[in-house]
Length: 95
Image (cartoon, rainbow, N blue to C red; front, side, top):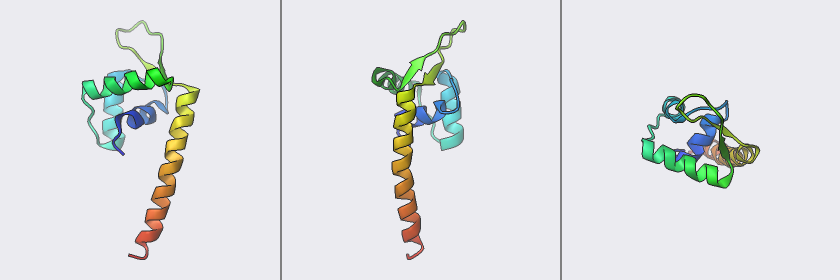
C-alpha cells in the first residue's frame, strides 16, 4: 500500500514524529519516498479529518500524533487489508 495518508497513519502508530522523521520512517518500512508536498498534503487532510493532531514543541519542527479516531481508522484499514492478504495467500496455494 502506498497511499500517503495510510503511510502517515502507520508511521505515527508507534509515536509522535515530525515531517522529516515520518518521511524517513515511511522510506524504511514501506520503501516509499514521499516528497514534501505529498507528505504535507496528507498531513493536512488527516488533520482536517481529526485523525492526527499537532503536538506542542519548542523545536522549529512540528511533531504530530495519532488521535483515537485516527487509530480506529488505521485499525479498520488494516483489518480490511488483512482479509485481502489472507484470501490471496489461500488462493496462491492453488495456483
